[in-house]
Image: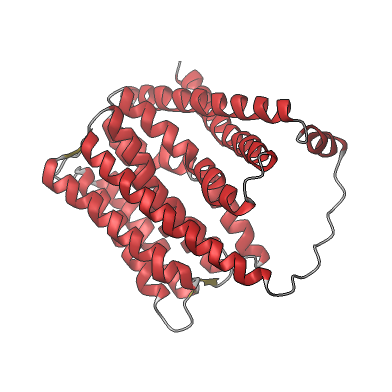
Length: 334
């Protein structure tokens, strides 16, 4: 039975990742046919799609009253995104931090991370009214994000753009897929199937991860912070490390910061509307400690970003990885 649980959990990971990919392709294609700006598509549909695995897993966990998994998925993903993904990427190539991230994104990440800790201390749970607060802050953040991007796009349109890069030849499957993406019915089908895969994959992942945890008497908090959080962060991990190796690092930090903000405001906010996400605030197994680690990771990132040159270099990467290793030692030894 154990092997079946592991297989179904891995299948859930695959469905989550591929389903989110198809959902983004389909939704972005439909929005494009409706003449929605590519900029708006990128800042809304694509950004939402990258958070779809975390969102589905946390909502499923909240509905099943597995709040340790729901919170652990959000907090664990944020810790992994900064300490592991950015730390590992910075070892391969210096990661520049854009001005927008310094002025808007990083302060917002620190604010919402502190808000998560504060609400955990105050009410010992994220209730539906806390979720509404998160979603209201998310709406305001998204407004400023889109407004700033629109201004930047207008300024760039006044300058001469470089010629587009030549596309590499595609195989038969890739060419067929490109042709089909021009058809509205196919885009709708892709969106619906992708969303179904995300929901089904999230359910498989949560159910079988819980079964494995109960089999080995592992707390659901640990499962949420490690296996599930790492699994839902795999797309960001692969993308960021490969981009760093290739030297394509312009938006790597900004994407991770944006993903972390989405995780707290959108994922935790929506999940708490389905069922209160309880915080344990006492003892070594407190998930409030995990939320504080996520806040500390954001503070570490901001501190290194403020150094001269506003880049994350090898020293920053090594320090982040050391912090990540220390945190995981704490998880399994305490």
